[in-house]
Length: 243
Image (cartoon, one colour):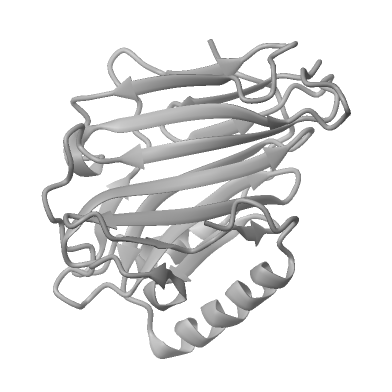
């Protein structure tokens, strides 16, 4: 089933993203959100779900479109928006040639997180996401959204060391670039075992993202990216979940 109906604002950021990422010899594709066969890949939490309720879904056999050939989704209700421990609202996510994260328009206030983990099932085995030093940032594109949302990236290496970006705010559509230098922690990005992208949204937000990859960032874009990251840090919605 297709989850949610919402007004889609179309971005023309794809061409710019492609010029920076896919066309580069040093771009490493993490996920283009191809749907599994027969697809789509979905997680959904219905109305009256208790805070802390989760739904998971694992898709395999996705090489070469997904690093490690596997994508794990985990959706969790994290806040009911009221004093109640349950929420009247619902949340869902679907991978069908892009990633959609939706909240029904009739939902009462609700917050949910969606974790997308790439670990190949048993670990990526030490992937060099810097592509020999040529890639210096993660990049993705927000192709549609009707509200701001938060994201963070976590990287674990083959020695179980971790690095995190912490939650950053995404105010709207367009290319999003996050420098490796913005991470805190001790993970070795040349020997990566797993990558997790966490999206955090609140009703009535609905948004779509596509094409997560690592890319080189020219110096001028790096400076711009640093400014956007600083703005995101200042715009964090809350201090929780920074680890």
